[in-house]
Image: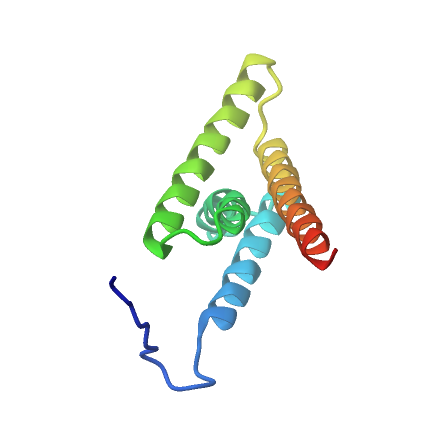
Length: 130
């Protein structure tokens, strides 16, 4: 029987994960805002692409809690690319393609994924309380 002990390489109170998550949220939100307003900023394209990849990846990663961190990142990014391609294909097939529409569609899908994850966690937490 093998026992694995995890040690933290950072000092207590020095975890940068919340800071990085907040920064990524701000950057993604700015990208969505620039795309939806039709800004002529040179940052519009890279920040919008970041939003289109990061928003659904965050939802998928939340659903994969408990997986190995590397596998979780890789799977959530691959799932994000797949969702983006499906949305683009659907919009092109229905002749409704627009960058703004794609951003809105990905925001809605990402929010739905996160909502489903939260509902599932809440339901399983209630089941444990009984």
